[in-house]
Image: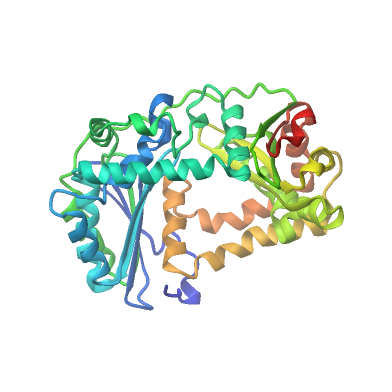
Length: 429
């Protein structure tokens, strides 16, 4: 990884080149000639929300297969080309998108771009590799289904998003992965892997014009359907509920509990982000870490997460506890939810959290990887090339009243779902 020069530490309209190809593909380039390294990060609109429940895991399966063989490269030739120059290339699927990336020396970037284009545009989905990948995924699902933390999180999201595409596991299930056929991979790729909506970000030791020319060479003749991203609204109707999932032979219980929140584009998003930092992120994981873990000794870990997706979101706490402490830990977490909405946040606590949220940005931007990831996020969410110039004022514009208001609005115990996974001793709790 190469560091950015201090005077160039805040990307913006002055040093980001943005181009949209005729086929809809968006390119962002930011030069950094401090070291002979180039980082590429990108995303295309193909994720787990685009498959039905009975095919859960399909988007992830496709992403795992595109580097297993393409029109011009066998699996071995593909890996030899990457490893031979000490580069890296990856593809992975999430809820809304499939993300891809590469890191290489500047002189090897054209070859990495060629490899990336071939695997994204022309995968062959070889049958032998499909069965190996399927076996790996089934092992991963078996491990997940025996992990108290992962099961608590999975069941929480399934319940909160019941009936919505967000409820489906990106990895899939034991009953869905075995039935996925090669033709389904081929059809999903043809339907979802397309230039319209795709973003490619390049940062590092390359002239902007050169980077754009190389990307044009590999992607300008790419065509395909315009992928639709429309989703039904999330049903936010919720009542207080406790769900328990027993797992045999476990010594720890994991709790995930919270409420519906907002989408990434809601006007309350930034206030919620500051509130979440106070609740369970800053320092020793905020108030939850300080109170539930440190002062009361109820949890091995305790923190909170704001998961704001384009069509909706959830705000929740996670904790690992002794099975005998589940009830008291749940009540302690609820008390912190209540306190955040009932009392104004002290100025010092608010300022510390704001300083944390703004201070982490320059640190992130010290590497080409951090810059590329940040620019991809900015473009994907249509934040504007000047977002980083506006970011501090956005965060510092959040008041103690804003924090208290969003906590009181969204973290209501009468709407809170608590999911517990662990030893069966908790069944009667």
